Amino acid sequence: MLAVVLCVGVLAGCAPGGSGGGGGASTSGASLTESVTPSADSGVAIEDPRDLRAVSDACTLLSERQLGELGMNAEPTYKEGLLGIRPCDWSGDEFAFSVRVDTKSGGIDELYETDNYGRGLERTEVAGYPAAWVRRTDLTCRAEVGVSADASVGVHYTSYREPQRSRPCQSASEIAAMVLENIPDA
Image (cartoon, rainbow, N blue to C red):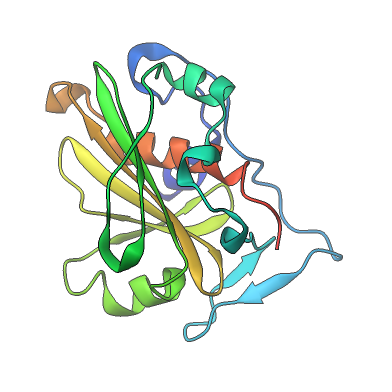
């Protein structure tokens, strides 16, 4: 099971609708010249940290090509979120997802430390970054990925398929890996 979880960001064909498409970010380790940012409390090292403060619009974190690979042709919409975090939402015929940039909640360490505020989580990895699956059901899942010591990006995925055909956490992780490709280096 652990091997499956570690490889989820690079698997092709995880997107619903059978669109295939690689789109996963590289999972290679950091070279000696890359910086490593240990997270504040737990010491989770984040190799190749990303600069989410440079991202002013979550809707820019997926390219038209990536959206096409996912089979998503809908225009994004915004909604107001907690703490002034403004997620970007896409909704299609078979699934919907939102991308949320979080530079205010303390990063992945805060999520790990609080165990998602007592609601539980499953630690995982997305494209070499520490992550967690939260708010998990048969049809929905949020993949929260630590990209620096104090910032994370979240992808909340909802499938409109029957539960036995739905893979919401794998799909959320695949989309998160695509998002990581478009976040500038720190």
